[in-house]
Image (spheres, rainbow, N blue to C red):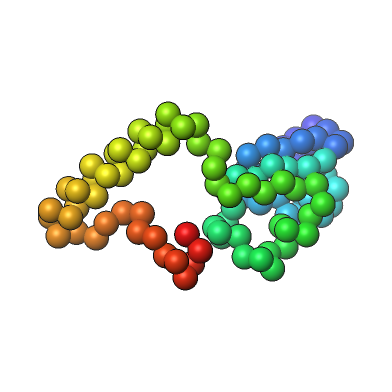
Length: 97
């Protein structure tokens, strides 16, 4: 068995890039995706059509880790603002995030 040939009906969890080819070929039994490319996933993206794929809205970070990441982002953005630099993590309402 290789990574390209998982056991029949294997389950693939938390994948960074979508398993479109493997899912269509029936090589995996299913997948749970918290991260997709592109993100957010467009309404007409082919991943939505796969019957054994669960897609969540990029929320798998544990709360404690999320708070640490948020605090680090705020510190960095305060530094950037004071230095006249572009801020990280700007929202894009037109992009859906």
